[in-house]
Image (tube, rainbow, N blue to C red; front, side, top):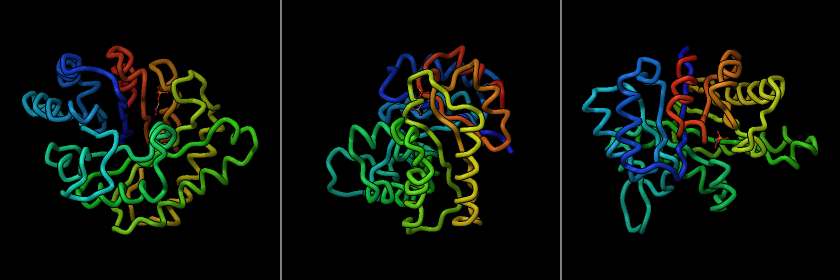
Length: 246
Ligand code: PGA
């Protein structure tokens, strides 16, 4: 199965960078693949759509978030999954640790977002992860299982889902878990989804300090279905290198 690479630009970039980088990615066989997905700031997704359609290019698009309110309505400032879908957005990152931490997203909110995305035909990229103190306390399996249990509350049928394991302590720090530590959590997630969503196609990603240097080893692990790349995805050379491994 093809591995999935998700570039999470977070709140970075500008329209010129979107135009330049996507023009390069559309022409490069290493990046011009449907399993290379760009999670751009929402404002740039329509620009990206135009560039990719014009090329034409196979890369996918993701939003970094989605409204918990489905379709349309009086929800000032929100962007619905229907609106994202109109621009060919295939995936939405949901529950990234930065949103859990800085925007205090609750379990209820995350479940509603997953439901809304699925209802619009968008594949959720559901993020889970533990803080350093939790890892050190040895309670990380309980904490991650609790986060996974949120999937029990999804109200719509799940055909396809991405789960991304992103330890908080690895995001943007250059500190990577060992291969064994990654493997332990990949297995936890695989077991959970096999029991709970046996008919769904589920891809399990690793995210946190992935670079052009360490991506090859991480991606070579059969249990790892791909990577979610933050900071390094802003660097074209490094991002192309990561994509060349799939
Ligand atoms: P990073 O971010 O690659 O910059 O560590 C990863 C993430 O936010 O998922």
